[in-house]
Amino acid sequence: MTGGERGQTMTQVDTADTGQGDAGRRDAGAGTWRVRIRRAIRAALRPSPWKRGLVLAALALLLGLILLLHAQTTDRGGLGSLVETFLPWFGLFIPVLLIGALWRRSASAVAALLLPAVVWLNLFGGLLGDKSRPGGDLTVAEHNVHADNPDPAGTARDLAASGADVLALVELTPQATGTYEKELAKAYPYHTVQGTVGLWSKLPLSDTQPVDIQMDAGPLAATKPVDIKMAYNRALRASVATDQGPLAVYVAHLGSVRVNPRAGFWTAHRDRNAQALGEAIAAERNERVVLLGDLNGTMDDRAFASITSQLRTAQGEAGNGFGFTWPAKFPVVRIDQILVRGVQPESSWVLPATGGDHLPVAASITW
Image (cartoon, rainbow, N blue to C red; front, side, top):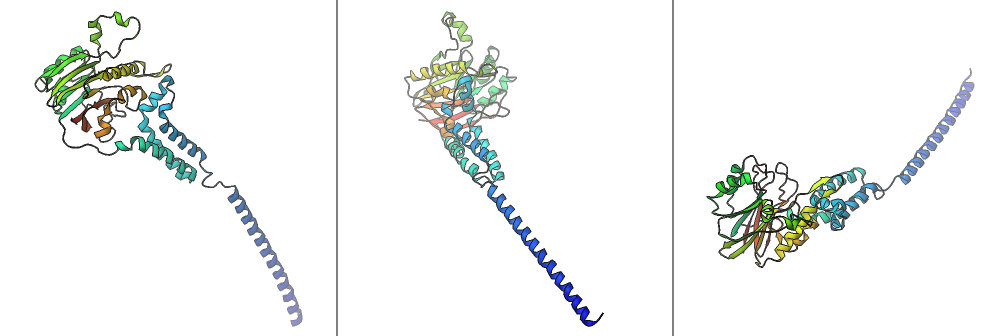
């Protein structure tokens, strides 16, 4: 092959290679554009942060409305009381929903969570800090000692060691009452027992009497003899003599609540007792009143409106935290209460566990 032929052949090869290169670049360019178009379509179809997590946002708003409008929740089947009993615990759903919102990168869910967060803090934020103050003129305490307490003598000694000036015990049994009277006699020279509730005091007591909180209802209630009613009486009233004058002290153990498939959260007896107790306190002439008792409900429960409209909670005004009391092994609600009128709570706290199934509560008050 001559030099001219070789040159011609190389020119043809170069020309062929150049054609194939142009075609490849055209194919690559077309592929890039297709990728870009697909990406643009996916980006257009992908929801924005405000459109993601709409279910989480709806749940957050529902939680906020439950907290905000809990008093308007229907009480059919005791639903309203059930919600209000565990209302503080609804706050646990807030961080759970927040984690879900961050995982979904949902701006709408995060924004919606502001409602339950603000409402919860408004309802319970004040309980998170320590509001107790030093001092106090009188220390009062209350304990549901439990009818099946295996060690009433030990419980009595623990309570006497608390230093309380006035001590209220509820759920006393005939078998254990004598033990409490014996063990508490040295520390508390004055006491009264009215049915299943009792009051022990370092200061003189007077005007002691049972309080009718309508444990019995119906047409046959009035026919029962007084001695029969006293056997299961669950409230009393007494005057404690103080340096500042008489202090009216009420001790109460309201009816229990039950959960069953047909009635739901059954609170009929407790609610009737609460209403009757509220009426008794409303008729009290002494402006200085302390209520000590196991009320079988939290002060967020609408059933106690007749009481909370007249009295203030010591834990809410001078406590540290929620002060849960039941059950003693793992408290989740505060159903043992100290409420006051005409005196100022300086501090409120929960005492260590005893043989009872509730934790004792105490408060220091001043005039």
